[in-house]
Amino acid sequence: MLDLIARDDQPALRAGVDERLARVELRRQIGRLEQELAGLVSEAFGRIAIEHRLQPAAGEPRVLDLGGLERVRDELAERIGQARLDLRERAVVETYNRELLREVEANPAEHKWVKISRHDVGEPGCGGWHSRPYLGPLGMLMGWWRVKVSSGCPLAGRLTAVER
Amino acid sequence: MGAGAAPRIGWEPSPQQGWVAPHLAAEFPGLGVAWIEVDAHPGKSPDPVRRRLRDLSDRFFGAQAIHMRERPIPWAYRVFYRQIGLDPDRNRTPVERLALERLHDGTFRSQGLPADALTIAIVETGVALRAFDAERLQGSLCIRDSAPGESLPGRPGELIQGTLAIADECGPVALLFGSTGEGYAVDHDSRRLAIAAVQVKGVPQIAVDEALWMAAASLRAGG
Image (cartoon, rainbow over all chains, first blue to last red; front, side):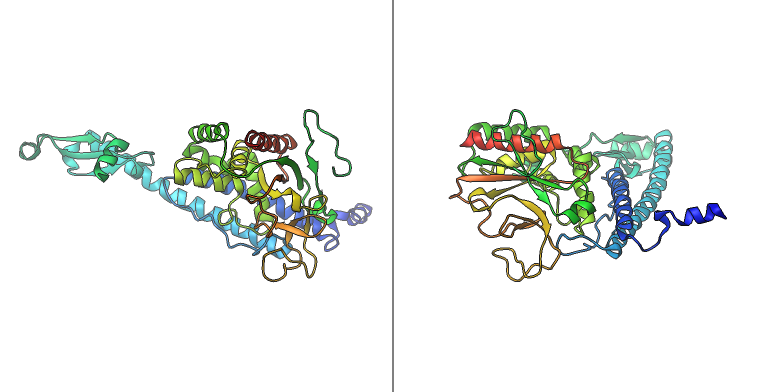
């Protein structure tokens, strides 16, 4: 019992006395969540678009009250949850595409005309893999299929020539 | 110089430390404002500054821009923006705004002084800087919330009470990370500039000092 009385005396347990402590804690949480969201945005860059914008809590800069800070914290947490989900779903698609690519490379004749881009397997850059016949129509008739690997992004000089 | 600020070695003159309203300092430990005054002639940037801007463009890549928000100083500003109700993806932090412009334009375009001096210092350090016409400022700079009936010069209407602003002894001169009051911005007639750095929790003092020093050095190169 003495222990309980002593615990009741602790200032941290006196609810409603100092909202500033709650605001400090919420700001700490916002900092941590912002860091987590930043990491997810970087991870997703070039793979999927992640919604990371929040509704501004205030039109002008101001000291947010508890409600305002909670709104920011909750929205950040929501964005992080959605980003994780989107990334997980994307990872499933990329894994499937990687397995498909392995099969296409192993047996292109069974995967005629299948085209897989680097983006499809979560790799940066342009280009990809394309199952197509060797020597065009002759290869089609003879069943000579191969996987052609794209050489990558077009060079700046070529793009300029196209614009001309 | 603000009370309690010691002169810093190697500075002539030393940066001045502004004050923060006590209740804001309690809410936001680490919040601060420091500034340095420099004689300068706004206008076309001299060759050394333009060369430095080009070098900076060559050293800045897309990957840096993408991972910028994970670096400690840009992250600290992003967090502070969130904490004061701004969305850093709509109202960009100074360093992120410049990074976006670099990616969009393919280079840091020279915009003359003092803009180029600020660009160099902000991109190199990540610290949020802004310039004022020092001859218009009265006394020490501070960060405080607006009082009832206060307004920002040149902006219609009163500020909502509690709006965070950079102020001098006469009143608000700019919104914190927002627009500058009319008459306080640098124009072609300005002859003495105040370069102000807003420090938030997570931004080390040495980065603030370096940013001010770098901006002042670029301005002096043009003076």
